[in-house]
Length: 324
Image (tube, rainbow, N blue to C red):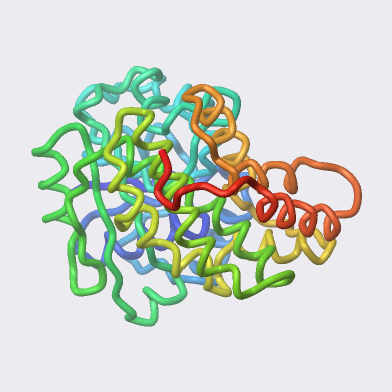
């Protein structure tokens, strides 16, 4: 199968490596000016994987798009709409798109599959691939479970059977709204976990419970199945995001609570703003998300702000545990 992976950062390069090992003809694309592309071009590897001879590295977007049957996208979620303007210059009418990204568009609250359809891609040609797992573990042969979801039942099943291996056990997603919102929201909870690692570690257990519950309320209000919040895309990804030393979002929260700056991409920052927008739009209370948003976008002493937000959460009025 001819597959092009657009985006050659840490996750994109792993996907190219993984799909090539599954016997596919893989192109790995990145912009010529990006450090990720330059590193792979000059050395044939990065900090995570080495590109074997079966993977073709290119900075020619036309070549990558036109030769592929399946196009996997792995870039910053906030850049997807602008990036698709470039991709849609080519004939993609017969292409399958798989989104290996976790985010919600800031300012609009749009899910990534919605951005794809608004860009002109047919809904039945879009799938999302999400769930737990860090590259550092995968390349050491440590297996994990993930989920592929799509509005197209046949496409979903075909992709699962084509991509599954002893390294990744895939499940069929059955709630595209819940899968996408849950996958994005876990990054917000990752930032909260990093803050708690510095200020109050024992609260990470309650964070897992209450975080999943507020995401479930949002999914339900948006027309999805609230049980999706307890599936692989969200709760199933908590161990990877809330506890792992590899998690960018958890590390962002930890450094924020210490008054330091994390320079790498932490998708949960923009996602906290997008989820806040959705909470207001659907009239859903999202106390943890709101707290993360305020610490990410507030001013003043970061450590004091983090402590203050935890105190605010504890001073909220008493409610039933499973309130709507």
